[in-house]
Image (tube, rainbow, N blue to C red):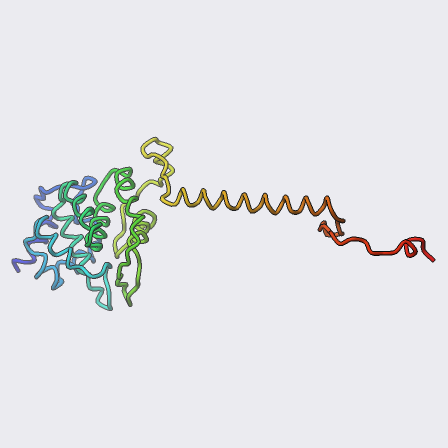
Length: 247
């Protein structure tokens, strides 16, 4: 019973004095059915009770997959439970940035957890984009547990889902403005693709190839005949003078 009080007290709206996100209790970012499953789950009671921002790090580095709920009973994954705990703790921005940095070195699931929290809890859209978009160059594999099976995804794909989809890991994400809107509002600089130089080289190669084919075609038309399909016929005319005179 004491374990449940750790979360249920925070969910009790009577006299709630904790941190607010978007003017409301952060835990309410999860739907009520999901919240109930989390606080009743074995992982929450045994592994999440009494955690703080430092000890949660120890749990996060042990994660081996991401996901929301699974199975017929829709049990919450450890990933979702830890995200719920982060919402309860509402750590400072510097701590989340530290999670993201540490995740880049070895602990990819820690990075995924921190990215999920950023998308849920950070209120300024431009900060969400500027923090998460650098992770689009992280191509490490992630195991993802779905409701009925397992999937392989990647860190960059997961981050892209966070920025473009409305629901991820059994959680409806807060609305976020499109990137182009933020650029028009001068709240974000235009994004420079990590593949920019490679794309320019490919475009340059394509232009050279097209120009080379065009030069060959022009040369063929200058030196030979053009048939009905507009193709140059460079074969010489072997007809004799006699056949040119007719019968």
